[in-house]
Length: 169
Image (tube, rainbow, N blue to C red):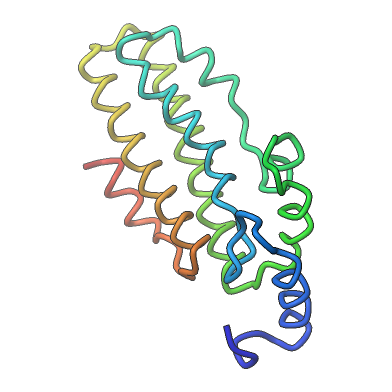
């Protein structure tokens, strides 16, 4: 990142945290850590179990979105405190698309779980439920891949039409 990429006040905060990173598993380009995505990997794994174990819907319903800071506050990540502190210094060119992607991801997961619960309660065809699980997982994975790319330096979030096409594909 060059000096001209960020406003001076952002550049100063950013550089101060980059200097503190050392060998922490936090991107020196974005100040974000991939460990946060574990929060989403866990729920997608639970959703994927639903076709074989419909009662897993209860565990899925218990899942709640956690912000980046909330995740690290409850995490055993070695550099969790640094990750929490660095989040305020994440350059806005990464933070905005990252937060937009997380919002989309939370919507896909929560909306998907609600839909699956309705189908299971209504006694929907198990093949239909399995197809919806695949669509939700596919959309969630695409959004997690997008978030991962942002963590590693991309500044692009997915457009809603891209997400919708994954869910309805």
